[in-house]
Length: 160
Image 1 (cartoon, rainbow, N blue to C red):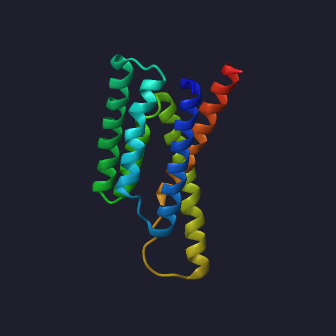
Image 2 (spheres, rainbow, N blue to C red):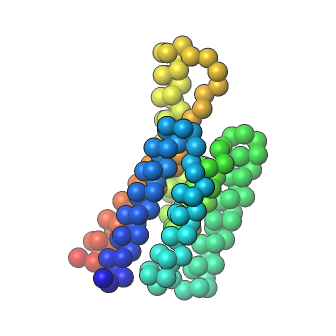
């Protein structure tokens, strides 16, 4: 198997992991640490097979993930985001260059806003009490899948 095929398999594995994260967050409002760890540990394998240089590429990915963790851990500290969501975003930051990840954040924000709106409408219709608990992992997974689709579609056009 050549490295190009293996890279597509890695993207496929990441897509499956994101679907699992979305489903588990939707069902239990929890994204497990083992899943986030698996996503994070897949990134160095991806780096090696995609031919990334240690400097500045790999170091840049780790730096991006550290920045994302600090920013979103702050949101977790004020109760605006769940811990699993923070870890999932940090793990995803290891996979994408910063401009691509910035695009992911924009798509995630739009998807999260729509998800919140639909959940607010549903809560109003059902007339339920208590705080609204939005499974933001669904929005994160959606944006990650969107980016994976875009990256793989773009790369397949250059390969074929």
